[in-house]
Length: 228
Ligand SMILES: N[C@@H](CCC(=O)N[C@@H](CS)C(=O)NCC(=O)O)C(=O)O
Image 1 (tube, rainbow, N blue to C red):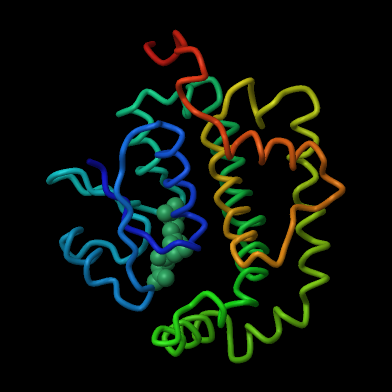
Image 2: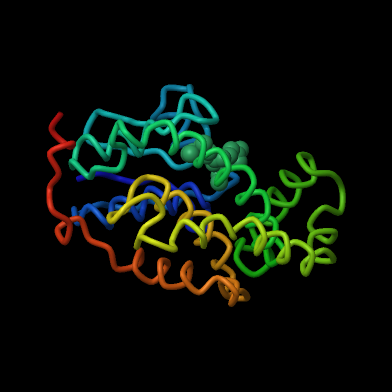
């Protein structure tokens, strides 16, 4: 059985979890504390300390660069999910960079504002130190003070996705492709604290989000492009 090693609020972990859920296969989730990456370090033979990683028997799958999608492509090939058709590869590559940088830069800050509520007390020191070393002293308080501004920026940056949904049920097509899961993962992180809703202005995005929550591979016909 495939094992997903993760922590629950991580946007990138939610992407893989949702792809596995969509595939309709049994999988196991192992949560690790964000301040103890020893399991990841050991399984990747000292080559990676990030999450998520996937394990299946003796195979361990992890990302090789900031913009690689090794894990999603592994699941896509294994379960013939149709997430990466060649005709969409270029546009998806541009979009996932926007999603993982522009969108994620806002969503993780908005979620991190509530860090004391979702990071277990024993891990809070390491969490705070990790954030402040990366983003500067007082960053979490600063993001809390900027909450409304960040929310406004997120609404603005989500507008292109609302527009993409004008004529189709998923971002690029009539079925979910990788970028649908990628955006869903970033928004899953944004919604994790329970303090936010998706922007009311983006009604199509809200309907898409509900559709994505229920989407199952078995509801979509196999495509010839899955077997080029
Ligand atoms: N591009 C990677 C990004 C993964 C990532 O940034 N993971 C974060 C957690 S959300 C992490 O483990 N960063 C390393 C660290 O926190 O030390 C992916 O798609 O998996």
